[in-house]
Length: 555
Ligand SMILES: Cc1ncc(COP(=O)(O)O)c(C=O)c1O
Image 1: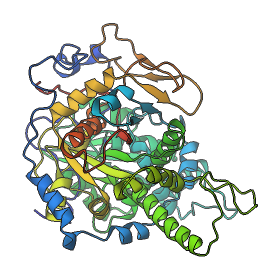
Image 2: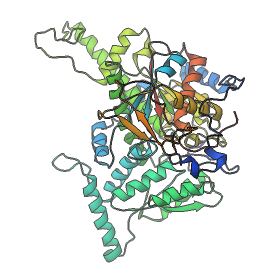
Image 3: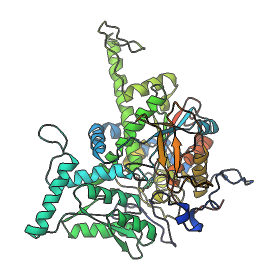
């Protein structure tokens, strides 16, 4: 079924009780029902079953169609034009904004040598989003930027002050407070409120931001299958939680859209785009850029200046994948443009820099360092086109593989979904804003099963790991409930700097985040040569969530 209308977004299963799409951090084992995440159901290592870790691949007809479609240029969009025209993201302004938020710190990039050796690539890094501003996923990066821009717009404030500085969150919050007080006590208008729908983390991030931005009321309509515990977390964050009886995510979207149409005092803030709702969706996507800028810097730091050759991103409605795809493909366009400029320079016999970066014209200028240059460096060592830019690899839940289905037919389609432990990936329809970007820029896409994601959670937990952290401190990461399956229930994991000893503990990832590792393994087995995944590869997994409870799939 084609879907360009209101149903765009997450399509949740209506069968039985489903876990939240985005759930909070893992609760202490003592607080969990034994049926969900007890050490007895999450062994510290994958069970020594006779079956290989991954069963034989599910039918790959969609993949074949996808590859076929990619060969059939007639339907393939013009990636060069799309990424050349993609609006530049002001990553510096967004990062500056994020630095204003309480608990700001770059999330660590974790180096996984044992995983790299096992899958047969040069290096594997994992960008660990399990503690972003004290929240268990990356979502607040997009939520915060969207709330800031939407409220500034509603208040009639420019986000750039006349002196060129940035409107501070504090100033915005004061303006919002004054406006809402006036509504309550003078004008008789309804105060400004934020409304949205969520399956967990998105709503939690919104509610947190609504508090920071002047104590704006935040009303969240949630699917009826959302567990009580998740609703309570949203309520504790300050949200007014309303359950839509019998409703799944799409039904909730319809409810909030209708309410926003009726009531001009509400600001609709969703993390998916549809016809007529592109601006907010783009702010959300742009907000994710901070994670990418951090990752690029951390990878360079860890590799003596190389850039990632491959990045792996999970796909739900596609917003985070849009951010990742646009970021790396736009970088590549800049490199290509730079190459053309360089060629012209060479033609003019006006070479300013030697290969070592020293000036050759006596000016003593060093060649500037940039992302583009890092890719250029990688390219020089590598033989062909794919290696001249970062390959974007996407991973979906096999119960909700709407990107693969859409790639196969060359248009955005809705797929039926079913329950999955990769709750955040349980989306039947891509964001309309994301689709053209993903269609043009994703290099390869696989779908993984719950079992594969679960095995990857365990592999990450047991992996040798070293963290690259920016603050110079040993990164001690709180893990609610401690290490899955650990006997002592210790709730802190030591994460040493990259220079310190390896093997101090694994990564506490949730299934959506670990899906990237499951996806990488699958790509290595089915398309290693095509994707040039080998000893020279520098792979980054975007691990979008920390450990959390889930019903362990049958293994
Ligand atoms: C932890 C996690 N990872 C990945 C995603 C997928 O993000 P998107 O919907 O932007 O594709 C989500 C979405 O909720 C999520 O919660």
